[in-house]
Every structure is written in C-alpha cells, then in structure tokens.
Length: 311
Image (cartoon, rainbow, N blue to C red; front, side):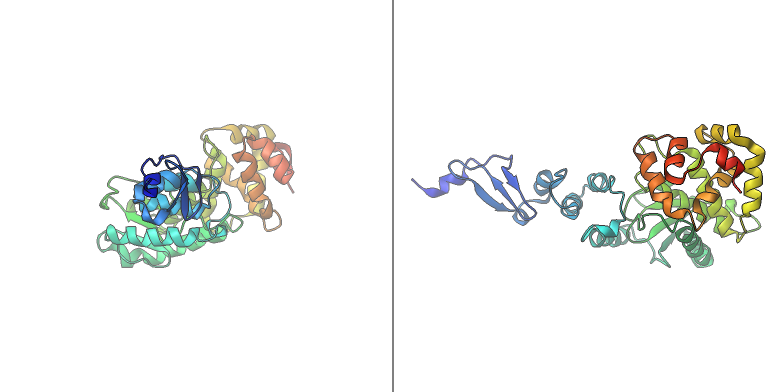
C-alpha cells in the first residue's frame, strides 16, 4: 500500500499542538505538520485560545490572521506588565508600527502620535508632558499597559478606519480623543493628562463591571492637578475627608458618580510614597470581586473611619 495514503484523511482536530508544529491524526499514523506551512487563518484556529501555549505565540497567530480582537482577548487577562511576557512586547510593537503605517499616521513624538491637521507641532509638548505626568503619578502601576505610541486624535479629525472613535483601549496603538475646547487657562495639557490617565486605568484588566468610579475619577483628578503643576495639599485633602465624615466617604466608595474632589481626596493618601506600594494589591482585590471598603481595608488597612480621621 502506498504510504502517502496515511495523509489522505487528516482530522482538523489536532491530537497535540506545540509552538511550532501540530500533531494531526492521519488515516494510519499521526502526521506532524509545521505550523508555518499552514495558512494564517488555519494556524490561528489551532493556536488561539490554547492556554497551554505561550501568550506571544497565540497573539502572533491572531494578528497574522488579521484577527486583532482575538489577539486583544488573549492579552486581556494579563495583569502583569506586558514586558514581563517573553517576546510579547516585540510582537505588539511591530503590529503597532505596521498599523500606524497602514493608517498613514504621522511619526510619534515622545510616545504620542498626534492626529489632526496642523496642530501637531503646537500640541506636541503638552501631549508628551501629560504622558510623562501620568507615568509619574501611576508609578506603581504595572507598566507598560500598551506597546508603541498612543494615538491622540485632536477634535473631530477622522482617522481612516477609526472614524468616530473617542477611545480605543487595546495593548497596541491605543487611541484617545482630545478636544481643544477643553483647554482652559492652564492650556490643553490637563486634558491630555485626563485622557491618558483614564486610558491607563482602563487598560489594566478591570473587574467585570469596571473599576469603581471613585478610583477612576480620583486618579484622573490627580493627573489633572499634576498637569497643572498644582500641589495637592495633604492637609486640604484631609480636611475634606474629615468634613465629609466616615458615612459620606462610605457613600462615595459605593456611588456611581461620586464628587470628583472627594474622590481625589480618597485616592490621594493611596499614592503617598510610603503607601503606593500597596496599590497593586488593591487592584487585585477589586479585580477579584472585593468591594471597595473591603479592598481598602485589606490592602491599605484603611476604612472610611480612618480615612475621615487620617492624620
């Protein structure tokens, strides 16, 4: 009998898949098929979703098959910095560069691509300064949360393929939209800082229902203040918490739309140099279903009562 008949009845379901080859059931004997010989979509079908394979292999397979949403789903559960996974950062950075070229986006400046008519040169310092502000504020955050530059679309400028999007949260070439009418006497830098901070928070594997409003709003308010070069006075934050009282703080922790100033007063002590190391633990607790009060108590040893009386 012709031995080649062994390959005539390949099953599409592999008996075993490794990073570079699949072992497929044949008519008589298993057949080893190098994955790089398969079409991209078939390779993605075999690799994507396989938790036993390296993350960079799964993401590469999805991106090669032009299935970016599948790739982002693979990365979505990674709470550690993207650079902690071998080769993942290189894979995402390469995709970001190719996607930026495909969309004909301008060259990045300081980690930011400014998309929007002739405003780019004038706004570049504000945008890059705001991104630095956010990096400094969220120093204990598991950076990086994205690879390559972030796209900041100015006003109603239309980016081909991204028309109408105000924000795209993804681990490569994320996007925010910043409107120049948001500028005030401090300029537009605070608006960039607010957008970049919210992007960073929402890129950090949020709970199923999203991060608590007090955390998002408080961090964004702190980023805004930093971009304005304002000193956030611990004494004034403490006075606000004391005036609000434990009951008011507890209500803010549970509120869907807490007062932004109070949210900032709650977040401010969490980022104190002596305490900020506990922030990753707080995020993990919230991510795994703990309530705000319980997460603060376990991660920081704080309660609404101690926040109201914090000296």
